[in-house]
Image 1 (cartoon, rainbow, N blue to C red):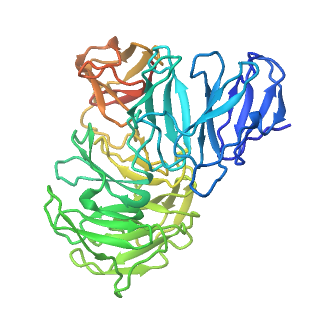
Image 2 (cartoon, rainbow, N blue to C red):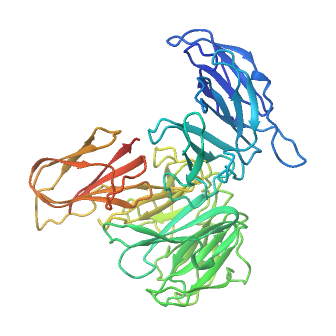
Image 3 (cartoon, helix red, strand yellow):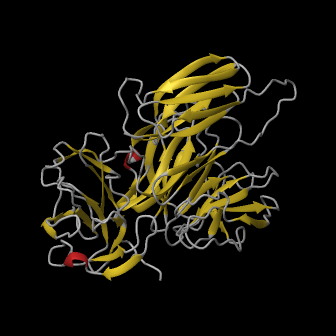
Length: 548
């Protein structure tokens, strides 16, 4: 017989009856817990339904004058070191955590709710609601620390709260250390990336639109590295105070032909706003011009969730406009004016028949190098479509190659962007998504061959052991030829936290030790890190897991 856990509730396998095997407990929207006892053993489980009101616990949400039952996320832990499991409960309608103490024994629990908030101090968890608690002795000091994530609203700033237990195993005292333990770059929902050299320093800077309640904004990360070894510094979460109701999507292009980048902003209500750059190529100054209109003076409106993309689609030296939207279709507005004075005229046939369902996000590139622009687009369900143009830019013939260009599970609302992020003459793929993060896929395909000179390729292999590790790991590199290499350690945000080596290394096998410390000699937080080894010809990355 199948066992089901109710949607939006987070179940656990836990030994709640003290018989050394795992039972199954799941919450439900009635505010109770469903309990399946393991009547088998630790090696051969056999789950038997006992009750859907375990310990007669009923949690009612704390919304004033509106007592509601909600989905739950629970965790069991012996928080008071009395050899039985207590219960911590995050509820859909609660902004904190419930504490339910086991006042019985490990084998005969007696669960009593003792608090509607936790911890009971100045660092009490307080969010928009539906908090997920998880306990672990992350600092190996013999007591349980607390991690809390927020399930209700992915746009909140509390991405992963870490509360260290500064008390004892018997008398916990959890105090907030950080609301962003993994130091992630998260701009809310539906991150839409755009790369453009906004400061004219010969490298690509990063802009990201986002969906947030009540206002989305344009986020700006300056590339303070180089065009081949980028390093992004977060500058502004509301670039030039540019915001829009719920969600906005940026696209850059020299709309007025004055040599600098202007900004076109797709808005959640289906319209677009034009921001003219009245500054310079190296120091932008954006001021709003107006809501974008067509050649008849009518406001351009695609319904909901306008996603603009500027490109010269007909090779007439001015920028045309492609717009995706909530309906999953595409609209082309050809510039029938000129490079300095645009007139946008709708072309209703150019993308005739293309419909990806919901939430199209177009990006055009001549991917197959046949002289005609192909179409890539994300979608609401997370698919990444590739439409090949078997015709020409003037008379396209669209053929759907795949709706899974990248086989990975990308969540939802994918936003593709192609850019040569490593300056190796080919376009890499960067994907925004509903979770507010970015996926980077490096293009390793050979795109250029210099027939005048043949040199050996400086290939190499890298590995790390142990991995996961604590407190130290060895990074081994095997080089086929002698060459200059750089070894850097990066966090999940893409920040270089440690420069491990930079210099010439002869052919052979070499080992480099890393003790999880940064360039200042400070031990870094536990988590995921990346080793990037690069030479003039090759870049390779491996993932490390640092445990405490």
